[in-house]
Length: 271
Image 1 (cartoon, rainbow, N blue to C red):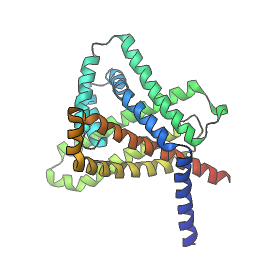
Image 2 (tube, helix red, strand yellow; image 1 turned 120 degrees about the vertical axis):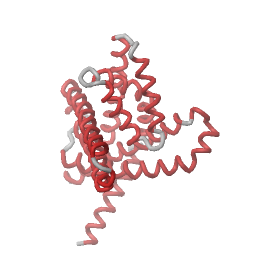
Image 3 (cartoon, rainbow, N blue to C red; image 1 turned 90 degrees about the horizontal axis):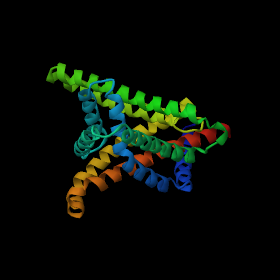
Image 4 (cartoon, helix red, strand yellow; image 1 turned 60 degrees about the vertical axis):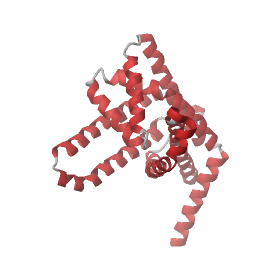
């Protein structure tokens, strides 16, 4: 029985890696990373413009800075500083300019959807553009709202508990960060693709993607600290851009690997 389980695990792992390679997953991840890079500022400026209509801008700024420092290893504070400058200039933009930024953000989401569908196997008969667009927007709005709630919990824990008690809650904080990654990946796998995805498949892919994401954060931080001097010599003050692009490439690979996992689970269920 143990041999059969191990054999099944290795077979599934092989199908995921081989299928990812056969479907040009690395090339799709590269294209997706460049799309993320070009749409990153418009997306967060659009989100900030909408969210700050309902909550104070100070609270959203704290949440955004927390997101960058938590999910962007080493360069998070620098990216947060750049985004603060972009958003300050965005206050002078007209309604038309903000609308264009919002459309650019939707195009980024659509590119993510297209790449996920390529890995999942797109069925044109499942396409319902209007309904899917509403779902996608609701998913991202829900992720932002849940992130603000988690930030509030984090602030309460860190500011109102004594220092000796924080040591006991550090595990809880790490667990909340992992759960937020798991929920975000699972919801994106479930609702962003046009292809129908079962909840259990989205959850399995979300768990794997969240684990890979945590390992990637640790490994990427180690890499940057080890080779930061070489990066600064090559790129100078622009070193943050290629570093950020590399991180987006890694995230894109994780996203698409999760989609390939769902594809393999689908095939195993139907066979």
